[in-house]
Amino acid sequence: MTVQKFGVFGYPISHSLSPAMHTAAFSALKMTDSVYGAYAVLPEELKDAVLKAQADGFRGLNLTIPHKEKILESGIIKPDPFAKKVGAVNTLLFKEEGIYGFNTDAAGALAALETAGADPAGKKILIIGAGGAARSISFLFGERGNTVRIINRTAEKAEKLAAEIAVKTGNRDVSGGGFSTGWENLAQADIIIQTTELGMGKYEDVSFFDQLELPAGKTKDEMIQTRLKSQAVAFDIVYNPRETKFLKDAKKAGAKTLNGVMMLVYQGALAFEIWTGQKPDVGVMAEAVLKGLERKE
Image 1: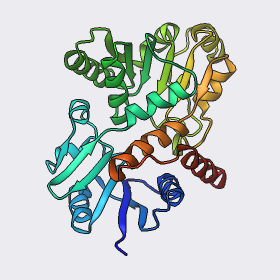
Image 2 (image 1 turned 45 degrees about the vertical axis):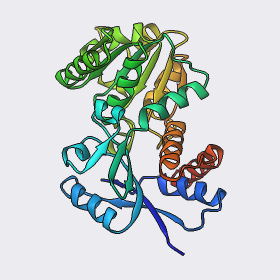
Image 3 (image 1 turned 180 degrees about the vertical axis):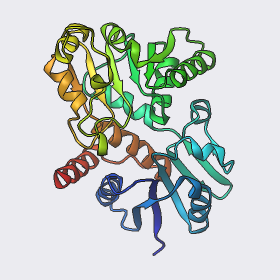
């Protein structure tokens, strides 16, 4: 039996639940010849590691932090039009004629919102962060014609990304700035999407709201209560922990909250379909992720 090899490259990678998720999907489809592993790959090793995976007969890979943008600099992959436009790749498909790159993050985020009953059509979107995931999600909503505001600790990075999206999508309602405009932007947003590492790992006790300067005499809770729209959706793409400090803060103010579990599942399901041509059971994948989170907690 020829083993069909898949995996995820990242650094760090020990936190990843992708192996459990994809293994469950393979098992449900009785694909007993397929295996999926997690591999710690340093940024400077990425090109060589991907070429080695190709030589070793891998069929597909996921890329996570910090490789989504860097892989395009390697010059060894052929990105599809959306991934090329976005400048970030999280899925690789190995074929005889080359290595193909895709971005399933944005579609995964959209599916997670829609499944949760938070239809983003016509809504004002606030994106927190300007990294690889923020790029893909911002581009998606830019293409869909939403009003998009991107804010980042380094304002110049958000402004540059917003300008790029406006040019490439023709949507002039895309803008960028720093955290200094955070409270004002929150008051205008229907959907807030948190894409930074705040809330996970060494930043587990930090909320995006903690990064915003408070007006004299005001508390953080008061500002959130008065700035967050009553029907606002707060979406954190972090999935471990399941409820970040950002989501806890937003929930106290009455916002509908959504964690990153289903985005992980849907982007993974799309990658699975790219690799195998089969639609996996997203319920099985979600159950595997939730069980993995319970073990980690």
